[in-house]
Amino acid sequence: MSTMFYKRRQQIKAPIQVDEHGKFKPVHSILVLAWPVVIEMGLHTFVWIFDTAMVMRLGAHEATAVEYGAIVLFNSLMILGALGIGANALVARYTGAKDMERAALTGGQAISISLAITAAYTVLGLLFYDSFFAWIIKDQLTLALTKDYFYYALVSGGFGLLPLVVASGVIRGTGNTRVPMIIALIFNAYNVIGDYLLIFGNYSFPALGVKGAALATGSAQLIGLILSVVYLLLVKNELTFSLRLLFPWRLNIIRQILKLSIPAGLEELTHSGSRMITSSWITVLGPVAFAANAAAIAAEAFSFMPGQAFAVAATTLVGQRLGAGFIKQARDTGYWAVVMGTILMSLFGFVFLFFPYLVMSLFDPPDPEVLRIGVICLQIAAVEQPFIAMTMIFSGALKGTGDTRG
Image 1 (cartoon, rainbow, N blue to C red):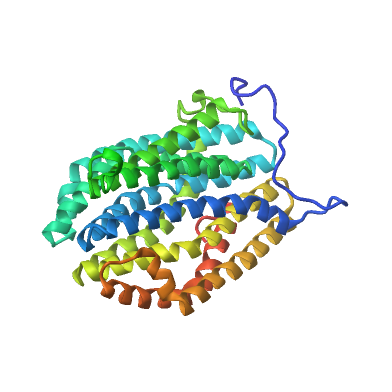
Image 2: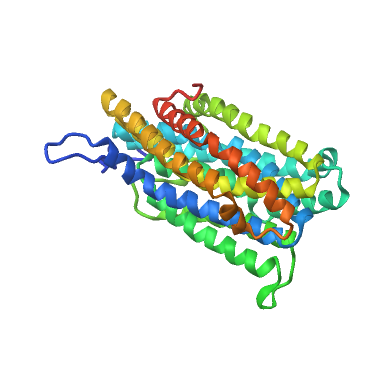
């Protein structure tokens, strides 16, 4: 490997917890990695709910438009964001093996690919978004508002979501989940402030409604990307990162990344694609039913926080333990991550089942029918929680082994 990147392999401090006898402590190691991810996911969920609650006050058409525009824009980018899963797994494996030169090069190549895909996505999105939404949305007011949201969210910085996800995956792969949490805190705070100022025109700002929500959300993603790149390039961290790692492309490394990322992307496609299809069906029922479903999904996102956090911890720790040659420790990590995550998500299911009105009232829906339908949706979602938890976290553990097809 060329010495332009490193003079030597670096010794790093991985987030591995041991007792006084040097025995690996899987539960403590998982929690050290998981709690920042819980907070980070909580921030994303809070902003999503805040967005939903704010635009819901504008009316059912506006709420439907924002939900639909966000589903198409951000879910499609998250499908492509499976590159971050491949990068996370590979960087974790090389970190466990203490081969930080290879880890940094893999991260740089993954970010480079994400930038190329982002450029292509942005061009295609601007060319075809008008006809795409006209094909799937029949209500003319909802159609016009949805197109506004998609366009302004994309051009104001929403395109930055894909490289942001990949950069965060690279950082987490080294065992550092605190930095992505701090970055998420900053750009989500900006998003909330932007929503407050631009949706209703507070403090002499223009009242832009749906466009304001789009501008706040899109530019927040760009800020998150800039902060992540600044951290990798300028702040002392586990990786000695350089722009020279981005280009030229190294086909052997790109093949490794894509080998892991393509199956993960297909998995995300089934989730996001089914959600898009279901949403198109729900729009036929009218804006009230769609708004109720959107509110229930936003509330359910709270329960996904521990599942996603333990899945990320499992991916990173399983990859690092396998990279270091400790197969049993990798297996124990996956097992305990599933147990803890399933318990926590089941507790959320209990709340959804027995206190659905309390949860739905947080959105303050102006139409009582939105509240009634949303409560039914939430009670159905309660039953799913333990099964979703096990699926999420087992999948995360398998990704840490390099198996993204399972």
